[in-house]
Image (cartoon, rainbow, N blue to C red; front, side, top):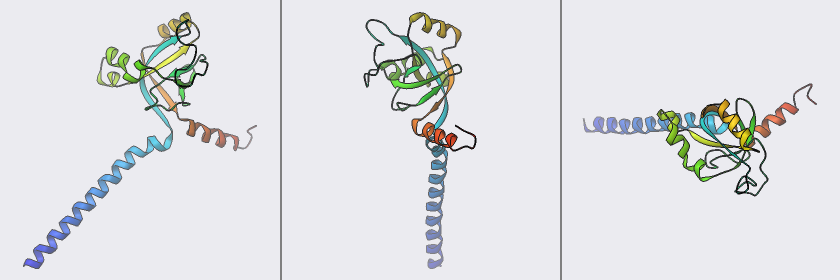
Length: 166
């Protein structure tokens, strides 16, 4: 009788370890597609900034001259060099800023949990008029696609290898 009870306890321990292993595998499967794919759609709060005497001349982190379409992002969430695909234009993540990292605009203007938890992207424009015109034509929150530099490089190589490409 004792031997039988010990076998059952041993079997229960193995079963418990197997369940933990399967759970860990499932968690990895859910997290892996975003890391592997390199392209992700996300809800963001978009703010605008423009060139003025005091700011907007150069990117804060590397000193590069800013151009229309450049974006400030939280580099912990969106890698520098990533392509950000808006409904009307493609931008590049080249800058950062304190309100982008703190997500204060999203937390203040969000009407639901998804909006309050959204990332903030700050789009650069050459003039104030361009920035205000774009802001008036689009909402504060929108879904954008973010393509990391690695996946866009892989895509360019794959496109170049297609028959009929130049």
